[in-house]
Each structure stands twice: as C-alpha cells, then as structure tokens.
Amino acid sequence: MVDRDPDNLAVFESGAIMIYLAERTGRLLPAGSPQRARALSWLMFQMGGIGPMMGQANVFYRYWHETYQPAIDRYQNESRRLFEVLNSALAKVEYLAGD
Image (cartoon, rainbow, N blue to C red; front, top):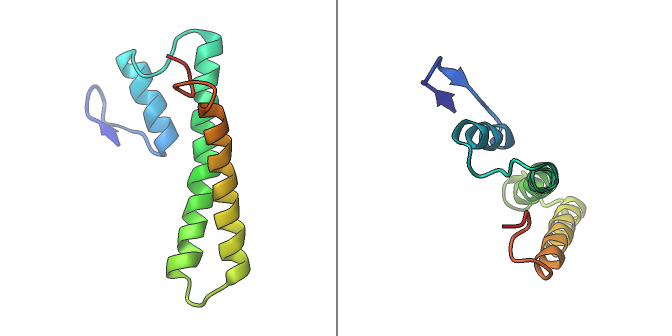
C-alpha cells in the first residue's frame, strides 16, 4: 500500500498495513494497553498461524504438481485446529479483541 499523503510511504504486509491505518486514523485499534495487546495478539495469530497454514493447505491441495497427502493432511489439520482455537475464544465473547 502506498500512502500518497504525506510522502508516498510504502507499507507492506497485511498486519503492518492494518496497524499503520489504525494509527493513522485513530480507529480500529484500542489505545489502552490491555485492549491493544489483545487486538494485536489476535492479529499476530492470524498472520503467523491461520494465514500461513491455510496458504500451505491451499498450495498442496490445489496447486502442487503431485498429490502429497502428508502435507495436505498436516496443513488442513493445523488450519482446522487454529479455527477451533478461534471458535473456543468466540464462544466466550462476541468479539475477539473486545468491544
């Protein structure tokens, strides 16, 4: 993403873009330490867990030049496990990072 105002700043990686936009606008990310930490923790959970695992699952399931079932199983199972973590958290609260 290139922010043309003020100086054509290029920001890349989804998490960095989200944090940049939140800080630039003063929205989307809590200012208080506990709430901010909670929101950033879930952002990093997505970036370091769900995103990469689902990406690998997709590559091995759809695009790999041969069927490599151990890799397919590993990444699909890990993706499923991570979604179970999300489901468990959302069973207790309406929003992962609070209101």
